[in-house]
Amino acid sequence: MSLVNIHEVHKYYGDLHVLKGINLNIKAGEVISIIGRSGSGKSTLLRCMNGLEKYQKGGITVDGKEVTTEEIQVRILARSVGMIFQSFNLFPHLTVGENIMLAPTIVLKKSKQEAQETAKAMLEKVGLADKFDSFPEKLSGGQQQRVAIARALAMNPKVLLCDEITSALDPELVGDVLKVLEQLAKEGMTLVLVTHEMNFARDVGDRVVFMHQGKVWEEGPAKEVFANPQTDELKNFVNSVL
Amino acid sequence: MIEFSNYDIIRNLLIATQWTVLLSLAAFVGGISVALCLTAARLTKNPVLTGLIKFYVEVFQGTPLLMQMFLCFFGLSLVGLNISAWNAAVLSLTLFTSAFLVEIWRGCIDTLPKGQWEASRCLGLSFLQTLRYVVLPQAFKVALAPSIGFSVQVVKGTALASVIGFVELTKAGTMLNNATFEPFKVFAFVALIYFALCYPLSLTSKILEKKFNVSR
Image (cartoon, rainbow over all chains, first blue to last red):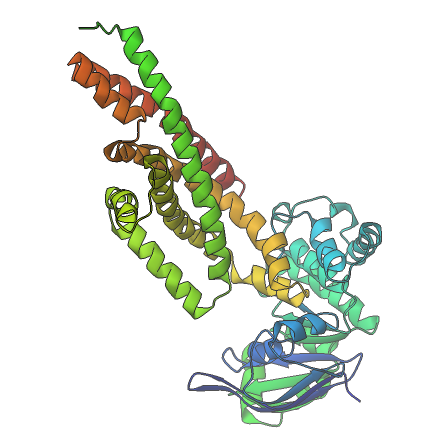
């Protein structure tokens, strides 16, 4: 039984048909990279996986739970699915520690002490143990993104969705964030990445999904997809980005 | 005829000023309370509620405060409600203030990036928890300066209560003018007192604006 189950998902923005029957199964522990040109629907697909976007047809389940945009369902899902955004979306009025502790205390009803211990452990994991009391604005983009990862991990998710999480970073900061992801992958975390980091997708990812015009155009083991693309669209894409 | 010294004029004006301050406070507290309820209602994104609030804001922003006061004072007594000048002034100023505050706060809440709502949603926070822990603390900081800035309009707006016979600063000035026939002196004092009330408010607003702009 796969952890994420996407079956014949269609999504429309008004008349625009953005997802045209997506099928995708993701097993626990897999690292999946979704690649493709902008407008191919990859971010939309990711946002459908945790109820941020509505889909009109088909079905998605994560960890056996049906994904809908109803608030109650989204809140149940949030215990299994973590998400990290391109723009970090840390809460600027809270310290790093408070950012990480907020959801565990008010959603999971953990005690403050327990939440604090988790927060510290997660910060340690992303290499920012000394930033517990800092405010997000005092951190670099790469550090902020790592705090966002720690914040998602503190909810103990089964799968982590990453929406172009290095696209807003200065090139020299990308490496730090990718290192954290690589570490998570090694520890067996299920990762679904929408990414433009092709080297990362090839070297760390298990499977690559190439999306084109709202469809899964081609998919397969990461190294194979890059070394031996089957369709002209993927060939062109790979040539243009590598 | 009784002689009025400068001291008498100022003393009487200051006594009346208490009512201006009281009326301003009542209107501001009332306005904030109503605006809070309206803001909460607006955030539910219920189309009927948001439509009604939009209409409310348009009506109170689009008509003179004096007309609103007349309608509260004379209009309500026409339908049999005996309303005192004080109550009419508080009621109309409350409605007026709330209509502006709800619009100011709408702007402040809307400036928060959508990502703040999305991140909260992905962490499993409910709508109310998102408001309480994420949106309002941030919006409050942004809203403080313009809200205090607007309070200057409320203080000045209380002058209109003189027209429906409520004795506050402006009305006291008119009465003293009738007794002394020294309009320039009396109204200069009146204006000075208004300025003394309003300037600290607008100054506070400016300082807050600077403070919160720097930290961004």
